[in-house]
Every structure is written in C-alpha cells, then in structure tokens.
Amino acid sequence: MAFSQSLHKSQIPINCHLCDIEKNIKWKCLECELLMCDNCKIKRHPRIKNSINHKVIDIKDIGLLSEELDFTNIKCRDHPGQTCCFFCKSCNSLVCPTCESKVHKKHDLIEIRDAYNIKKDKLKTGQRKIETNKDEVLTKKGHLEKLKNSEYAKYTRVMRNIKNQEESLKQAVEKHIEKIRNEVDQDRKTVMQSIDADLDTISRSMQQSDEKNTEIEDLINSTNSAKFFHEVGRIENSIDVPAPKTKSTYKSIPDFVPGEIYQSNVGVLQSKNSPLELSVSLNINKQYQTELSHVSDIIPCLYDKSIFMNSNLDAQLMRGNYVGNNLRISSLNIKVYGMALTDDNDILLATGKSRIQQLSTNTGKITDTVYDISPLISTTVHVTSNNKVIIGAVNSEVQYKVIVMNTKGEYETVYGHNHHNQPMFNYPQSITSTDNGNIHVVDYYPGSDRGRVTVLGQGGGIINTYTGHTEINKDIPFKPTRIVTTPRDNVIVADMDIHTLHILDNNGQLLTCYKTKEIGILCPFSLAFTQKGQLLIGCTRPKGSTTKEAKIYEVNISEC
Image (cartoon, rainbow, N blue to C red; front, side, top):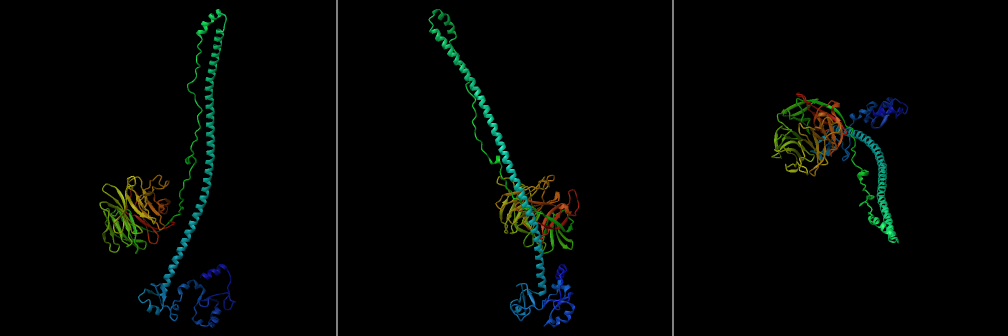
C-alpha cells in the first residue's frame, strides 16, 4: 500500500519488470523483488529457478505484508543447517532446536510470530514517542524563538531606558549645577554687599577722624589766643569720634562639597530568569462519577488497573477497578488525611495518628509501619523517588512540622521553625518532592483566608514561597489543596475555588496556570499521575452543595 500510494502521488508509470511493456502491474514476487503483469506472472515468472517456492502477492496487499511474513524459514546464525523455531525472551534472540537443547532449555521461549508482534508493537510505540517528542521539540523551538525575539525586544527596551536615564541624569545634573551656581552668585552678592556697607561706614568714620584731627591741629598751631579760647570749648566737647559700628560676623560664601554618585541614583540591573513559557493543554480522556462528597486523595496502582481514593469528609477509603468506562468500587470505613504509594505497590496512610499505617493492595489489610512520629500526629504523607518518607505533623501545642524519615523510620530532617525561630507552616496539607531535592508543601489551614506553597531546600530552610497568581487570585485568594510532581519534574497545584491548576517549576517559580473550567472540570481537589503519564484529577462538590457525586477525570496533559 505504501508503494501504491507513492506510485499514485508521483504519477510515474512503471512497466512490468519481466516484459518491460505492460504498465498494468498486478503482482510482486517477494523473493525476486519483481513487479509483474498478469501475463508474466503466469507465463514468465514460473521459468525462474525455484520460483515454485517464491511468494507472489497482489500489490494491493503490500501494506498487509507484515501480517503474512514467513517465519518458518529463518536460518540460525550459529547453526547454518538449522531453522529457527522459537524466540528466547531471556536472551533476546532467535533459537533453533540445537540452540534450545544446548543453551536455552529453561529459558522463556515464545513463538517467533509472537516475538515479532511484540517487537513491532515496541517499535511502533517508539515511533509514536519519537513523533510526540518531535512535536514537543517543535513546540519548544517555537517557544524559544518567541523567547529569543522577546529578549531582543527587551534588550532594545533596556538600552533605550539606559539612554533615557543617561539623558535624564545629564539634565538633572546640569539643572542642579546651574542652581547651585546661581545660589553661589547670590551668596557672593549678599556677602559683598554686607562687607561693602561696613567698609563704607569705616571710610566715613576715618574721614570724620581726619577732619577732626586737622581741626585740632589747626587750633593748636593758632597764634591767635582769643580765637583759641573761643574754639577750644567746642572742640573739647566734640573731640571724641565714635568708632564705626560694623557687624561682628559676616555671612560667608558656602563651600562646595561634591556629592557621592550611587548606583541607586543612576540605576542598577536586576537579573531574573525567564522561564520558558509553557503551552499546556489538557484533554479529557475518561471521566468517572463516584458516590463521594469529594475525592481528597487519589492514587493509581502500579501493577493493575485500579485506583485508590479517599474522602475524609465521608470517612471512606475506596478501591476502584476499571471496568470499561466505569469504576467497580469496594470501600472501607476509615478517615484518611493523606496517602502515598510505595515501590511495593502498597499504600501509606496518614490517619491522624502518630504512626503511619500501610494498606496492602493485595490483601486489603492495614498494618502499622516503622514510621512513628510520637508525640506528634500525622496530617499527610509522601514517598520520594528514593524511598524516603515525608510526613506532615502537628503537636499538642498546634505547632506544625514536616519530617523526613529513612526506610528504617529514623528522622533525617525536621522542618518546623526558621532561623528567626518563627513557625514555618500553618497546616501542611499535601507534600511532593522533585528530582533536585526540593520539597514542596501545600500549606493551608482549612477555613483561613489564603494559603501558599512552601518550597524547602535540603539545607533545612525555605527557598521559596508561592502565594498565587497576581491576576487570577486578585479577587479570590489562593487556597491550594493538593500537589503532585509531573514527569518533567515540575509541580502542579490544585486551586479548587477558581477551578485552576497552577504549574510551577521545581524551585516553586510560576510557569503557567490552566483553568480547568474551560474543559468542564470544576472544583479540582486531588491530583495524581498514572504510569502512562495521564493526569488524574479528583474533584470536590461546590460550596453549599450536599451532593455525593464527586467526579474523577483522566486527562492527557502536554508540555508539562
């Protein structure tokens, strides 16, 4: 079929390979690789040596060739005289009877056709993955090109702002310099006027003194005694010349003290990462309706088609087995605050007690574990990729902690107070971890005004806090419920009040938000990923509702 499609598209006529005349090709010999017309198939092809054993097929069936491959005549590479009869799954190779008797006696042997189908399915899966990866790479390429253009535009804007600041600073400096120059000029005038006034006073006083001195000198040198006695009394009464009255201090021209130029006055560069904008899309694959008030937690099992869910409002823990598009439910009356899946496909339960319990998915029995946090009690539980157990805990004084334990139940790290001895948590509701070692805690006390996601580093402190989207949560505060790590090591947080998923990177920085209401998913509460990468969303009932019809959605999610 692939060949015929190619032939149709190219419109290039092909003659029969045997007569080289007839263009109406009907047959193909798989051994000779010859294309033939009806006449040559009947008359000429049989003349070829051993052609009686050749397989000739209709060209319309070329696309179906894989279904009719001959697996009965594959020669063994190790024993040329033998024909392969089985495929050894243990050794991943074809085997003949001799191979089987000598090497593969107790190995897992299957029919060659079955092995072929398994391998073919695996290759097709690989092809689909390649195509998916290619689409994702193309999408990422588009985002990177968009980011590159954005950064070029940002560069132009930043350089323009720097230039504008340069001009503004120049103008401001010139204006200020002109101002202080004028002030100095004015101060000079004032100071000089003050000094000149006193100099004038002194000059007049000196002139008076000179005149008085001359008058006295003339009287002393007078030879007219009558005139002397007639004038001497007047001169004696006015002989004192008052000292000139001048200021005791004078205003001085101010000195110029150069000011410091700081970065804050000129401007500084603030660096921040530009996370690649995600173009997340969600498509509903399946949906199920439960008889729960809400789905507090949801966990898909590793090795069978079943999920565990709980509703702490209804104090019920349920197991659902997929039957078509329905869930066959079995339930257990127990109040659970948090669940986590172990590598052994068992489920850890935080039941509000000091010791974490374990539910066997095989037997359904609940037993105690080594994870004991006495005298505290548990609020939630999480298992990391390296099998450490992280527990949300509270003590009798209503102080909340997050405790990291190893597989032996020994404490490794306890998060409770920061470096200023202030509490780090209000109520750890849900916990997840990422490959970079960070722990992400949904910190929200039920009924409070708002919540947050607190990101804990391996050093024992808080490295980031996410309090919601500035626009989306502007009118309705961020009240997170559950959190999960994605296959790409990002995290998704459910915000049920605004029907939104917040997607953060593994350091708690916002990447994007997705409004689930746009695809009909209301009040998302709990989250989990299946082994195949689908996202499970467990919902709750709207505020004020008393129904028990909480839904579970299985969605395909991309770019996350």
